Image (tube, rainbow, N blue to C red; front, side, top):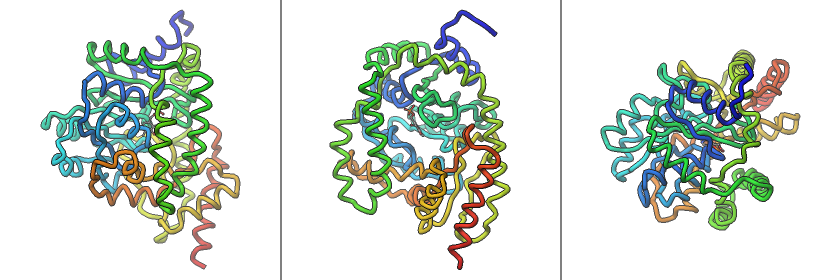
Length: 375
Ligand SMILES: Cc1ncc(COP(=O)(O)O)c(C=O)c1O
């Protein structure tokens, strides 16, 4: 259908309909939405609960807003926050919680929202990896006091850049729009800075625990690259988003097909493949999460890369080392489940470049690698 609406208007209307929200904004990235929500709520120097296995940029957004991140352990069966872990964090008197639907697997939002209400805690629902998911029968992105989506590099709807901030509170959205309008515009300099940081972080996160002195770099790096946490985009940067959103059903159907191929072909049944994460009804998959014994994980990844599977990754590493470096004054509780998950995770590709044949090949490579370990 042809309309005269601008791409941003069309995208906003689409996202509102999809998430049943009355309001949506398009920040330069999802992290900017988190930052803006904390600003609008005038929350400063407060404890903000984040999953110990979420993306580092969530940590950065909390730090940039002048708040104190606190890592919370996840449920080992789901990889997501649950009220058990959150109860343990009440002792720290938190003001906000940022539950994430990790890998597109729904977090138990009904109980988390209820828990937060009881304790007067604001919820920012992180649906950056869960575009199109349903959580307990309601869309991902519909649950938080504010919710975020991401269209950044490698996300389900990959616009290279961009995010959404969703809410049903008109006053909140008006204020967030004002705050976001004051951010610097994404330009060639910020793009170059992003490319630099992505390369550095790709190397750093793989070796930070093997060489703890690398952690000393994080405060300096945050001083240089921290401005990447929040920016706004020019109108042209949104041109493709309406099409990406229109094609989301096909995109998700492809991901489900490739997921079925991995499910079918990853046959290796011994202790080197750990129990898979639970996939609640309504899940979508951002990447296919594969858990392998921690002592084999890096060698398996290296072997996949050598055989051309460059898109096998290990997102997300535990946030503990970076948090300790960037927020040294907050003692962090232990997070064994998130740490174990971070040490075992491999993500296999599901995007449109991954064909059924390629997925079967990748699964065969994984099986062969694990068989070799036995002999
Ligand atoms: C779990 C999670 N939350 C939030 C974000 C932030 O998204 P963005 O890159 O659009 O800021 C990302 C991705 O970077 C993510 O993976």
